[in-house]
Image (cartoon, rainbow, N blue to C red; front, side):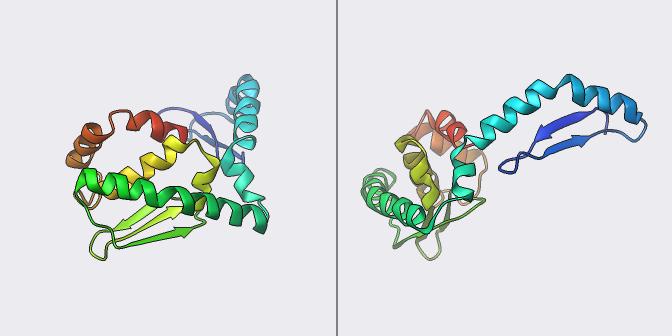
Length: 163
């Protein structure tokens, strides 16, 4: 490691410091103190994020998210499956912590995170398109990104809203 790095983890808000062994502890304390305002800003941003809300959700809220996503996804899948000429067989919905969706092209199954209900509609549409593109491009290589660029040119901005 060549430099000192500081990050605030989501959704916990924990502060993580990485530094080379040779950096004195006093210098690290000064480094952190100088960035105290930035740390607080990041922790506040994380605390206000939908992912933080999801960690403390009630069963009723979770079921409401499921209902929203279940209502919104099928029309989007139908619309984009025609555009991409793909044929998913099964749509599933789960409350997941680490992914927005998943796709199994060999079985035709796609799964969507119900937490997408907490984000703008264009984010849900992005995840639908992303997963359907995996029927044509199984990994995230250049071909996948080229396909996403062609069918949804603003996908990077939509993806960023989910981060």
